[in-house]
Length: 338
Ligand code: A2P
Image 1: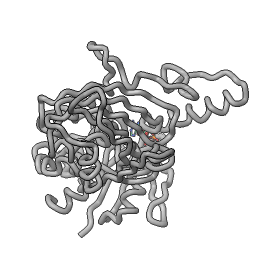
Image 2: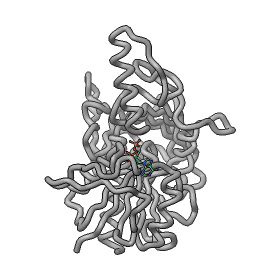
Image 3: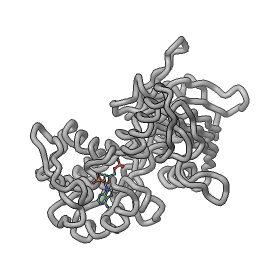
Image 4: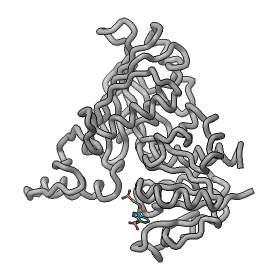
């Protein structure tokens, strides 16, 4: 059996990788529709040794697809996801549009796959924020073993999370600066090349940014635990692919670093790289970029807290943080539900 799949935002940073992951994982696709704005209609994108023609989203008849992978921004999802769902196309939405709706499941397949069943209510499943996904894949085994009271996390996020324009801005600013030329900041409020920006998404009334609050809201929803406390600082760094996170947790019961290492060695979707020698840890560029797993290193007991554990977690934000997680949801969906 095969499924006809529409990729919305197929020309974007995430959409392109969605197509290549469908191909790599041999997802049972029938027809694949690559949808983008009118500007891109008629372009061709490579798929399975051939190419497919990009079509204008506004003109597409969603009754032709059983699954829609959406990654063209929240506004586009707000308008088109309900239309697609009404036409019988189950939407897996990579934007923040539906994540905080109680009736729409928010899913990381390694953490809460059973929630996929709730897609029936609205025909939409939400894919979480990239930073939340990699954090929860790494924390799930610890959460299940001893409980987690509080998470303190600082992120070091790649520019690919902001889309293609931002990637071009990092490249062009870097080249300009190396040639002694001045730079213009357009995609970000300040220069991103050779710099670090403590702002991702807009500011909220409480002084946190929206990216930080996404990690708070989404962690509670995915763990199904309104009591878990999360304190994030989200930072943009001049890296193209791969988000890094310094995570400090306070567990409900004491757990040793050794036990955490053992749990993570057996956890789905996780690779442990934790040797206490020079370079014995994962990094965004060297290990995670282009890979499916979330990498964990620097596992240690917090010397300032009796029930504290520290971890360094790295993941490819465009793959596990977006496209791969969406395709894994689609795999569960076709295996168990449609
Ligand atoms: P297009 O390339 O035609 O602009 P990124 O996250 O890398 O910026 O990519 C955004 C994706 O969303 C692109 O595929 C882009 O298509 C698509 N997109 C943006 N605006 C629209 C729109 N109004 N209708 C359909 N697709 C859109």
